[in-house]
Length: 146
Image (cartoon, rainbow, N blue to C red; front, side):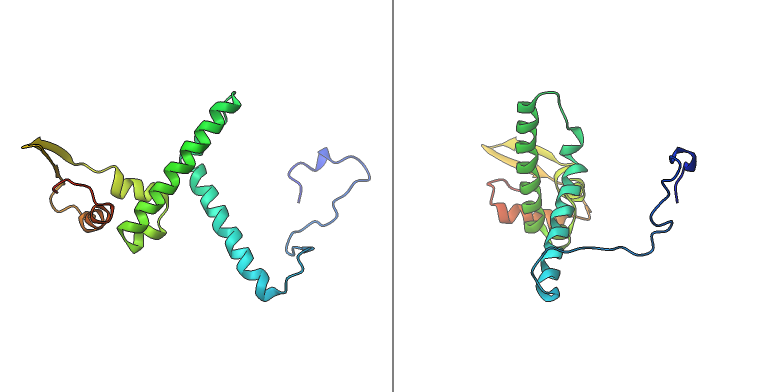
């Protein structure tokens, strides 16, 4: 149904006045059993695009092509590193969006102390994500004491 029916020129009515049925004309030679996994992969790609648009790509476009290219490169690198960190941290974070991973594992209220040629990371006590962070810390193998 049109929101403004007065904008339709005379003699040009709608083809269908309701949208209960959707017609598709697939041009794929695959049968349904092979087309379904391809559709799921496409949905995963769309989720990755939505995740990027919710974070770094929300600040595009710029007036300069080279700035957009550089920003896209940095955004894709940060997205991939964040997803890898989530996968190393826990099964929950392996499926979480990058905004959740940043809130849970990257933006943490911690303090770094230096002494005796060593660094010590002081995490908050009773922090609910300490185990996930410890798994990530162990997997990446830094040389700091926690």
